[in-house]
Amino acid sequence: MYLILFGAPGVGKGTQAKILSQKFFIPHISTGDILREAAKNGSPMGLEAKKIMNAGQLVPDEIMVEIIRETLGQEQCKNGFILDGYPRTTAQAESLNKLFRKLNISDYALICLEANDDEIVKRLTARRACKSCGAIFSSSEIENDVHCPVCKAENSFYQRKDDTEEVIRTRLEVFQSSTKPVKNFYKNENKLLEINGLNSIEEVSSEIIEGLKQMFPQKKLLN
Ligand code: AMP
Image (tube, rainbow, N blue to C red; front, side, top):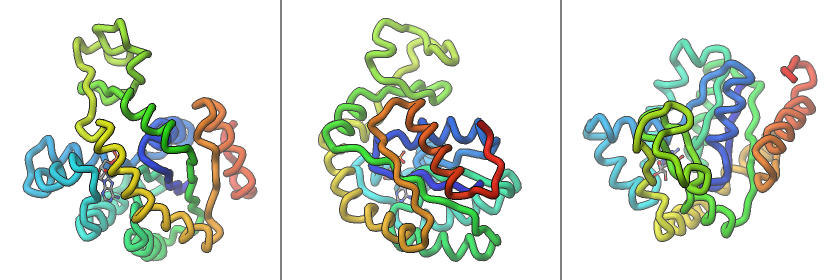
């Protein structure tokens, strides 16, 4: 199963990608996580990306295309993967299509999660992550917690620099102008699955599974 999770920042791509990754036993490839890791390691590319990310803009296509070419070529991606945060421009989508052809991948789908801007701003300004295990929470879920509920690390919660309201508004503008056209690209290819991202996490994942069953009737999907 080769899946692409698509949608505005904060719509729930990462959450759904983790669920689907466990369900289908395929790796979750988040380009945002790859870039944040590169920034943490202090490589020249990582440091350049960090500035761009903190401003809410997109890292240049050439860099992203190379990261994806290298990542999808790895052994762990041979039997499927879930892309989260890629492609974000039509140039990236076109290049991914070429890569799919080269890798003989034809059973792929773009899952588009939809939500309105107000809900997204609300979710993202409340988003907190654990710097030890990467788990994501809403601030109200961990209000009185000193330890991370997942890995038990102490005082490990932080807010991403790009989750402030000003940067979120920029990211939403960038999504509208540069990323949204990607949806039509996959619609024209008959590979689009549209899902309401405003429902509960469980409802969204079951809607995705149902949609995939209809899209790939020949595949035996787990219940
Ligand atoms: P995310 O964690 O997916 O919200 O990504 C965080 C930031 O990483 C984005 O706002 C961009 O600055 C950068 N980024 C991630 N994926 C891409 C991509 N496919 N193309 C360009 N920039 C990206």
